[in-house]
Length: 516
Image 1 (cartoon, rainbow, N blue to C red):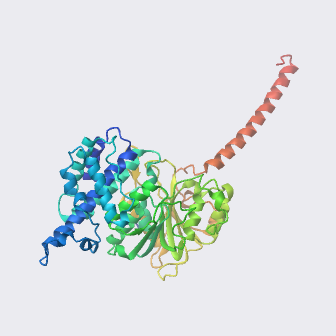
Image 2 (cartoon, rainbow, N blue to C red; image 1 turned 30 degrees about the horizontal axis):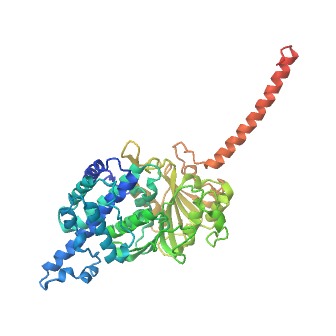
Image 3 (cartoon, rainbow, N blue to C red; image 1 turned 135 degrees about the vertical axis):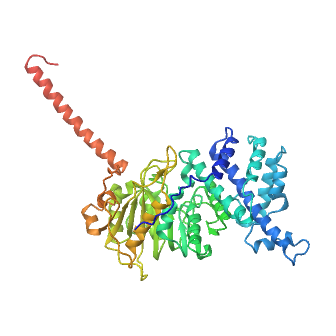
């Protein structure tokens, strides 16, 4: 079933890793969260400058070239390249790298780029001149970034800079620790979602898009299969203003046009794409958010299958995404394992309705240690509307469960990644189960197509280990609030029994003349 091939993880990169080590040495005592914007802003500036220079040289090499045509702004817009004024071009920045005023020079470059490119307005960092940023180290960083992309035009502009930018996003997520991962989903997780959903054509939506990894991976998938990135329309939303800017930059580096709204906004309380019905939704919502303001929107039209609890946003995310699916749309998203079994505040009833309405396609239990900033156990949910395409078989009376907890390779002391082979195997079984012309078979310990009636017998719990017959010891997937409630009730009962035993012992001692 599974396609085999060369194992590959994002850790085996080499050039990017060496570059990161050099850049990190220059960080000195600066916080990674702050340094992130310094480095990524420079990489972005070099990217758009390199892209500009490519077109600049192409114009000058044209037989029909005439004096001054290389400074015609419209010529660059026609090539979907950002216009870069002379004082913002990398050669000018590099030439002034060792000057004390290099911070102001970079700030001025960012300002004029935003002025001449409306889609970048409010996106670029413009605080390189601040006194606490060491200008000597900043100059050294400019020199380091200057080494990125030396070589042929395609490698320089399209591949290397984009790879470095993405690699640095991941390393900053790891370096920042708790909270840093808000803007970054591990690439192997994103790739698994994309390989299973196959977003070839249509509207692709991420309601909590972070730095845009879902969109980047979708574009790669399309190109790998001979399609065009112009076949998809990208829609996203992000509540964190700095992360929203990172996403805009990430998409720009990849040449992806996306509608992220005019600004950052809270998806639940200010849905910027209210009328959107997406063909594909890919997301990694923040886990178990308790302060999402659910009590203020109890009557929202999105809660078709029940009002999600105000104390946990997991099911609010699920219902929000289902609301935004087109009639034939499909969604894949990451959630904490508690979502598979929780019965807190009506979550169990909502899950039951999703299951009995045939919306839940597949559940994948993921390995531990995939995320940089949390050890919460996670799973992948796949939900879909009715699909009338002739190639799909009717599967509304069953759910595919996949247990991938044994998969993955340790790439550091703390972190694990799914290999390309792992991802191909998971996706292959899923697609075979869905497709009419493929003979699907359960594999004990790995996958099981369970009837809805079997899920009903298990109390509508969706934990894959209950169905696949795994020999892996079931992880603790019980929701914290439910577990603590049960434990405190048991403890209260034990205290009561302890009081009774103490009373009996006192009475017995008193009878034999040793009263306390």
